[in-house]
Length: 259
Length: 290
Image 1: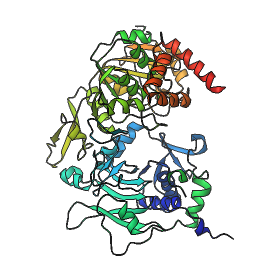
Image 2: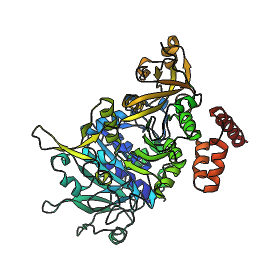
Image 3: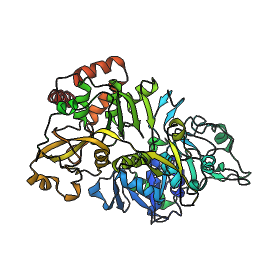
Image 4: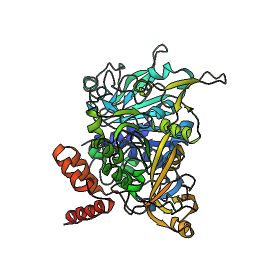
């Protein structure tokens, strides 16, 4: 019999790390953007975070655990959540979003708008979308499929999504701000505050097969690196079954993080 | 009671240079594209386009119809980045005002309620306030110490929206999974025009709409009704049709190069009317099914 552990891909590890971001969230909306975040949120709900509320990404909440891209007639739709209601509910704080930044700095300020000078960008991307409102109103995590110093950078060109230093500047209105974690293809990062200063990014764990030096070399700012950096946990047998047989049998996750 | 039916070109004849035009839908979803195409065929210029942006924004900006874009994002959904929006932004050909999606919604609500502004937490701490120095904050008068963004009303001269079905009086149903902010666009505007996949009698509207929850555009909001079958093409208009992904791909590919873009414009946009556009789309489909 093949040893299952030898078959675990980096993408599987990332899925479990994403799932862990939602641990403890309870009965709020999980809003994952991207393939691996979507798989991770579904795995979290199917295992240790059963109260999480998830949508199909197109205006319907559903119960049960379903494959990526499942059509409305394949699942039990239990709620209607058009964009207008998303924007109202997010201001109530009952949501945890996971977004994909094009740039992020040590305080968790993130850019999804434009690269270069905003007035005449080198590369226009999406625009700030819901980033400003999400980050000032509720918990945010980030997913970065390709960890590099171009993405994890000393200074973001446009703060679409608010980090810890900016949240500290807005006084009482910043009290709902939390950037929980950043999961990349190499590592898991979280945030730590020293002596009350705005929190900065810390290396929480490296994925199996990745060295601390590799993460540091691919990060464009100084990370807080503890003396002992643990390895990111492996997915459990049940999580692997859910990933491979239920949520992503077609292996879409390998397009974000190749084996 | 007034029969508000008109053609796309008659709607555009109501517009003037320099107007602020709000466009309903979201990204590449249920956009009033037949009305957008009619603007592209006109001499209109210097428009301010206010939109949860998709190809409506890309097309109007690339054609030089818009001098100013007001958006939270511009995307084709299945193709994340709108190539014509990229083109005009990366060459600084338009004035840009970028808001958060929630700020944008708050601005529409303020305009619909005839308020100068509404407070919101969204935007605080972000660079939205830096790139738009016209934005001000306001202190809560209730002693809680909160300083909030005073989101200015997104007042519109005209709103353009696309519905699944309408009657000739200007009532309309949005029967798909998301109605977006179309009713607010209409309320925020001095005049609103609704295009629809089909226009039916008032007696048949509810039956055609399927459910009274979908009857969200009312005749006191709308000033003109246009029957435009396939009028949201190439954006999606569920349940009638999905996005024309093959056409959208061709659109995005063409936009990447001046020569191919000129050819695309010539074939699909510089045509006599909406019927000529739809005829070219039918030919395109035939070519692609071979």
